[in-house]
Length: 540
Image 1 (spheres, one colour):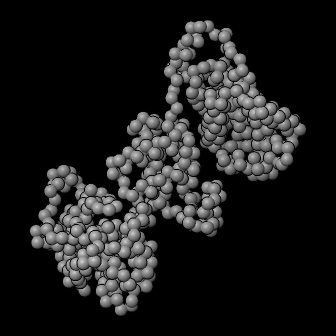
Image 2: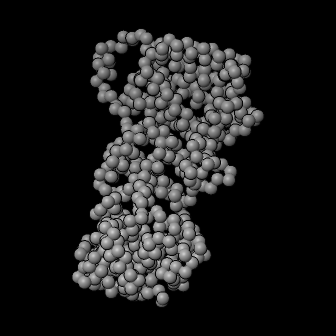
Image 3: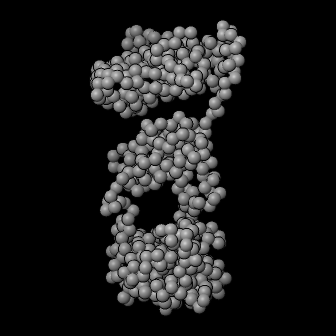
């Protein structure tokens, strides 16, 4: 059988399309090639696949030479277009079988129209111009081609020619499915039959589901994280397609995901201007705030972890999302929290303790704020406290931070701890409040709180503290929220001379170094932590 020079076979018998890129298109004026696996050992199938692709390659090479298209851009267009042609052709050849009579007639009609359009320079469509088709093609491959330019006219002509060639290839293969070829000998036929059939790979959706199931099985994610990861995967599927085989992904697809995130709107599902609209319509839209760099990196971290898991579990050979995070300096990093000054803490304390301005209307507004100020605990940890979590250990009153109870969770294993109750909280009447809740047969410290799958139990306190209290006190900034109390406690304890490992044991941070992680598992005594906690003093 005649094989064109661009069709080569590897040592293992798989055919590759080896397409030359002219030296005129290379930055150093060197000839190079594009190599793409056709994923078949059948020479006839490989020949059929390569014919239509070679026609597109010739036209794109001519375009690149004629109009100075950059080598990298041409390579990207060739790779993307060949890959899509390959996927479409293989789907038609291997999945659907021969065309139905109606489909065959449709293809024949389209072929005649395309042939006429190519010869007479008329549109491919019988009812409208081809401008929309060309605009979508240009946008898909991000080509620097303007309507009305000579390049645009060239693309218009080549689109008709390539489309005509594609239709001919589909019809030719359809015809080949309607007959059997017995030219090859029995030994050759048996050899082909003996070749192992490569099983279809897992789709992005399947890999994401398996990965999420495993992580949840190991209790690695809190409820909020599960929802967040699902949102990240949903966007990934929207960009790349949930049915896409993970083995077919390339670095170009990963870059396309990153480029999309760099232009992705903030609160897309909530903003009336973007809610419910297709992705292409909401990107780079004027007047729409985009997500911050910290959020972009959260998405990319999810994709890195997902495909690293897929690689380790042999679903793919490469993790193209590795190292894609957007770099930023510590100074400019979004999401940092500022500690409160002592004067600001004292202002908050006077407001919630004396309530002269009437800002405190619910008991949780006072007590959740005070606990945050005098423990540095996370809001989620405070909000999920049950009455039984407040008790005495060795004569010391403590908050027992644990995940035992109704929809309770902790961020890390280090978050499971006993936090000594500061004397200021006892002086303010915390134990009396606990007893009052017990008298009411309550089980939770803050029975008014409702559970939100994404935000846990602390949503109401967060809204009141961040959007009402701080605003009324003139303390509201992007970097100053309830979580800033955690930074404040950490800072004040260190300033009071408390050793960093001891501070970490109080506020629930992971310890650094092998000594503390492996050989100091028993940790600091409750007495040590209590003495350190009482050093927290805001001067009020």
